[in-house]
Amino acid sequence: MTTARPVEALPERQVALVDLLDRLLSGGVVLSGDIVLSIADIDLVRISLRALIVSVGTEADPLAPADRGPT
Image 1 (tube, rainbow, N blue to C red):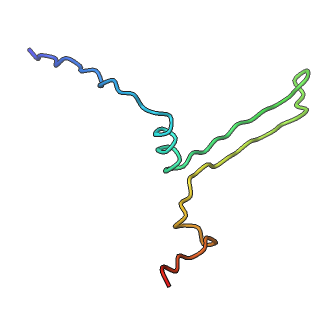
Image 2: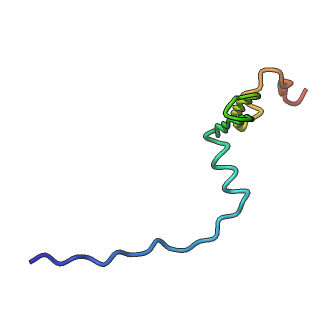
Image 3: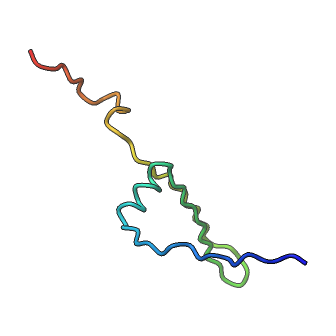
């Protein structure tokens, strides 16, 4: 006879929208979608949307001015 352990619920915690966006953007998010307009089973317009959203730090920006320090 085996005894089943009770399943514990995950602790409820509040997550701020800013924290959620920070986590998503640090790894990157890909959004994609397709829209097809048709009449009588004839495709008239097809739109494909693709977007890559990532956060970019100033350290990775080659065009940012270099910090020369105190002179």
